Amino acid sequence: MTAVDGKRARRRRRRRLALAAAVTAGILLWASCTSTITPPHDVNQPATVFLLHEAMHTGIVLPPQGPDGEFVEFGFGDWGWFALGEDGWYHVFGTVIWPTQGTLGRRTFGARTADELRANAWWAELSPVVVEAEKARALRARLEHEHTASIAQAVRRPEYRWVFVPYDSSYWFPNTCADVAADWFEELGCSVGWAPIRAGLCVAEP
Image: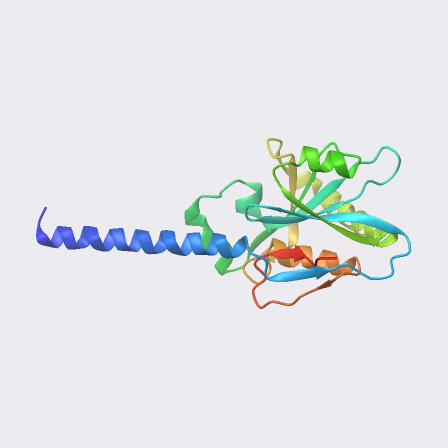
């Protein structure tokens, strides 16, 4: 190897290390809490919803409807990354830097009680939030309708229990899964702290 080749190889290694460091920093930031959910006060007819967090995904789990109903999670993400599984590290920057096609994901856990939910979604962090039951019912009905409306274009990933459909909202760094989940919690009467880049959500201590 010549001296010139050695310099080029060292430059390539430095670029790879810098890129790996940037990706790692981004993942750590995404896993952090930059915005706090405060549940509503004076709830008359309480229902418990859950903030779900796993790896780089944040979603909302809504309670069962009817005697045979079960908990259901909705989550927002990038169509290529989330629905199609194009989740190699080299897709990170293209996914977050400019707007891409969004997706609405839906999955169930075979859970009819909070204990069953925690047992069946053992890999995820679940934070309970008490809200008005009617608001939880209305949000679930709206998201079910939006998901069903595009079911003909669905992508199913049974290994993760997800069913994804195209969503009329672009995914990128100002509009991530945490941002859309924050909007859903606000729809339930919660207040959610503002952040210029909302990397993650957490629930206020009671």
